[in-house]
Image (cartoon, rainbow, N blue to C red; front, side, top):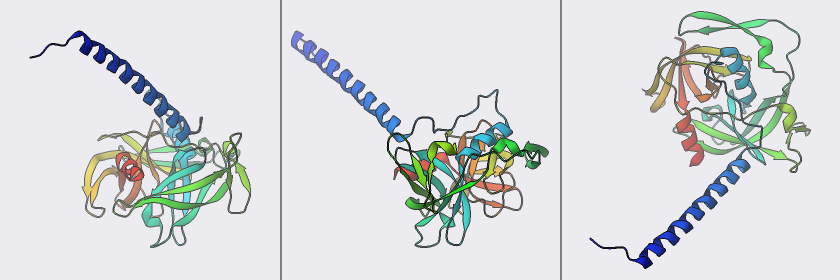
Length: 284
């Protein structure tokens, strides 16, 4: 046992003052970095629990979804983040061939689908209910193609990240298309994903397909099941998926991005890698 004398008390007080000041400085720096990571207004919104709805959530999902084209295969992806100078897309690595490190990302230009009142159906395999979704709710029109390069990848987890460079100064950012045109970023209305850390058994979810402008609705059968074909724990869902949908986002009915589709079967099964694993690969 020892006593704290007056000088020690002063030293401790000074130490605490300096420590608090440093913490406040660090917090300020962290907030500043967050602001630099994402351009204001370009992160997807989400719905409240009371607002949760397949149609509304699909509209949010469509703004974060892109088509991904490699030399011989096509798939989908989602906008992981939008920074001051780049757009980062997460997708499935197996879309690209061995040694292939570039591809084309196709954005929607945000224009309306027109006055058509046609609808399409999505089967909710959680309760075998067919839902008619208004096609106009997706707000999808023309296509903007831009070159993208792989900046990070993990062969074992079948995940890769693509980067599209943004042109322009502080006043405005633009995407340079493969045709050599510049398209204003704000005019596209695209958003980066808003993620959720985990989904649970029985949760209503859907996989969004930007090619068909449609979703496949279903439910989570297990939020962590070891899938031998992929050699890792994955989200196991009951919903209809097909070839060519690899890289598509798994979303909740509130619009949260919960993971990425990597595989499925003809028996209405789908397996997705979770957000935690995606974030881990990006942070490597």
